[in-house]
Length: 465
Image 1 (cartoon, rainbow, N blue to C red):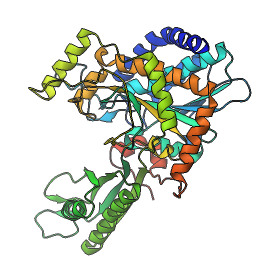
Image 2 (tube, rainbow, N blue to C red; image 1 turned 180 degrees about the vertical axis):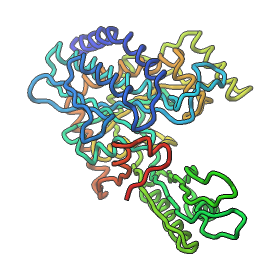
Image 3 (cartoon, rainbow, N blue to C red; image 1 turned 120 degrees about the vertical axis):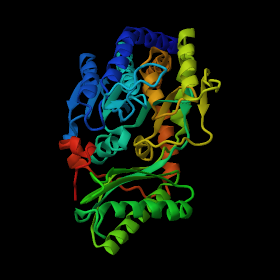
């Protein structure tokens, strides 16, 4: 009987916020902001929490677009952390249409953070209201996490102590499944390499060419490291190359990320890039400068939390797409992959087999605090980090999945607060899995730049020791 009361209360409170939730989906989507520059996106979410009775701490630890929000009921309780993300991706702007129609905006929500932030904030608000209504001892901490797309914000907050005192962490994401996700994802290590050469006329035989150093580094990685580390993906972009062919560039930059499921191997592979880049600079007689961005382990699955989330999701049920939603997604799939038949996961499930080929900075948290995640499905033919994902994220056809997850996440939060024994079991599972592993604070760079001059990070002019 008591479980039915909680379920009904969750539904009642969720229905109160549903309209606000959907409004924020599109408001956030219409105002995409780059990592570290999410002033409006973070403010909207913090204001909603403030209006809902949460205590708000803005810009904690000197991180301007982060925030902490707390709600409690009673004196003694476990403390559940819920994460919110809200940054967008450069170069992925598009209208909410099934055709490729760039908007000209600086970024686009090609990872669906316009859903994640409102969904997780809404879940925290619903859970808090229900706990107060029936006097369930509770502490709920909503952590506003900037710069997820460069795997930076949660690492910065963790190293500053923002997650101390939490007993477990819950979050959500769009993907290709509706369900509770309890399997590993990729570790990522990333940073930027700068070569400083000498400028001069392109008609001369001139060896101190910064761009040549970048090109030699890239060639070495592709010809050697991909063979030495076959399980590691090496991804790069040249951030600065020069302005005109007949002026030898003074400076050139390359941003590298190594990705793999083994963290130590991923870190080792990244360090090999730096070693070779340094060697190349010495041979060419130019200056070499490395500035680290971040590193994160992939998820450490926690079955106790994962199963609890799945139980809540079973009560809520799968997404309720309309026929119009399905038609829009089919048109989008036809545009992205002509002739392909749309594959959309329409049920719910518990996913604890296999791996996920993505990286997130909350993966690092999962090795210290039990963490669980709920997903909602997009069509398999729509690539993540693609203009089509941006298009779908801004269309109402994408709403049923995150709506499902918001209600389920709220229900799971209340169930965990009401049954702290699950948290204790989750902590024991985590201890057992990590007992042979030495965990140090993850490395992080760009703190001064991201917190004080993020524009310099994005225009490729930043320099830190």
